[in-house]
Image (tube, rainbow, N blue to C red; front, side):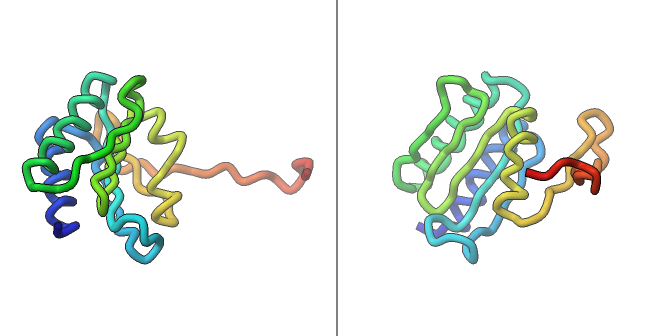
Length: 134
């Protein structure tokens, strides 16, 4: 099955149920396990579950192998593994804490203000020179 077709179907499924801040990362040069990582935010555990289920249904409709889902119990972070595409649907606080886009993309992804929708640049704390070292 064409990974780009699965990727596009997953993004479409996320958009159908109003996922926020959808990011698509091409990781083909970083791993041979999968080609694409999609990260999206949901405002509630109910929406997180609905988004993950909808992604799974759209992938199934395409004829993709059965998606494996993890994290449905808590609903704060659900991973949908569709083989060449891995989808992470996360609550905003969990997403910010783990920052998968930076981990896989090598740079911090731009954040958007939750009300204004404008980019907000994250500042990383740099230890001062008089901080104790380990």
